[in-house]
Image 1 (cartoon, rainbow, N blue to C red):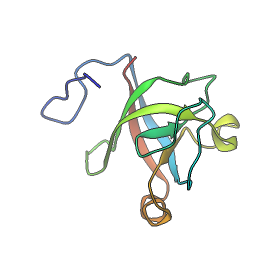
Image 2: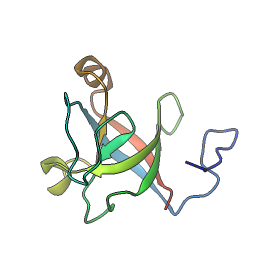
Image 3: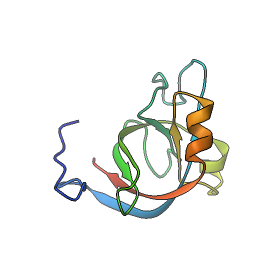
Image 4: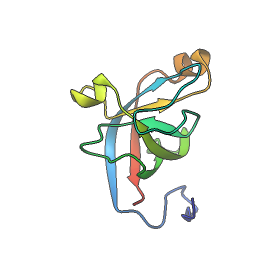
Amino acid sequence: LGVEIDESGTPTNYVRKIENAICTSYSASAGRGAGGQGLYCGTVAVNPNVIPYGTRLYIASADRSFVYGYAIASDCGIAMMDGRVDFDLYFESNAECYRFGKRTLEVYVLD
């Protein structure tokens, strides 16, 4: 995505940082997100009134013990629209979703 990461695992250029973002996980067998893109690891659901579709993101835990990495805002869901969750990260399988669960992460808005 053309963004450099420093030695601590933090993007060197970003528009804003969202700390303590509540993140959950989801998976789907096929289809497209609400933004029209296909769903795959690296696409995330957002509230498009807050984070527009197509926005590039970088997502990791504060201590970098978990790094989702680069992502594109591509979908939305009820939990994001009513403010219960900030981001829903797409994973390839239900097993990955169960392992991830619900976490508080740092989200860097890259553009």
